[in-house]
Length: 373
Image (cartoon, rainbow, N blue to C red; front, side):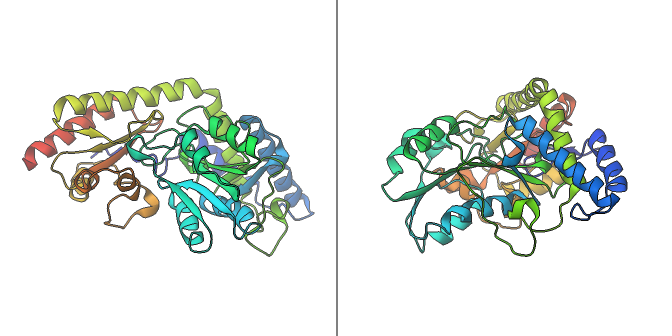
């Protein structure tokens, strides 16, 4: 059975070009970039070049780019860089953040005031929501630019302008944004995090863009790599491949986004025409590749297993919450009824998907539902 992978917000498969590039680097760039011998200098040069390439793709300075093994660690580092300096300061965030942010701030809420803005069924905070939540003692604003479960977009440009005017650090989780919509870092964004495995690059590489005067403070001790912001020997082949993945996306950005949009729109249009009562979750503007749908009178966990047996990979929500049978925190906090939340499935498309796969997936989904009924 040919499988159809529709869980690209969890992670993406390597493209043949990226796979070949990565394998070639692992065979030729194996030295420790902190070593002074020839192999070490080669690795150091490759790392320096990778940083320059990432910076060029993001239109920032190389000195503003820091490599991390994961976006989770990067986000934790960025958050605690502010929180440790302001032990009693107030924080503004939302109730639909990824767990890498939400769990940090939920823990911090026992020690300091934290405002979790309720976003409602639109799925994202408005700039007005953010501005009204800011207080005299606010030390940090943080939110995702795109929600990983619904694909709903947050207006980080307007929020950044508010934070710049008030002199408040603004940390942005852009992991679900990269590769699905144009990504520009507007004025007022202090720190932004992206991850390579969301754009067909190997896992184990993420990047933080830190804009002055924001300063990262390392969570770890034991080395001076990444200008002492992230100790530990750098995974140079992965970081260089991250740069390659960004370059490929930027080169084909318009075509790639158009392709993803055409897949998602065809998928939703077909299912909505075949399944009465089907609901799209998140009424706000969405990026090109995410379709979070609630199926009437359906148990999502059972449906996911049936889809898997038919060769279709999808998800019930964030991969970082996998294994949990609890309803999606994101959809629950958006105010949807429990029945709607429990019947929700996230389909997310990638560059490797085709229109033929979309049509086949729709056919199989409709057949499964008919069999159930």
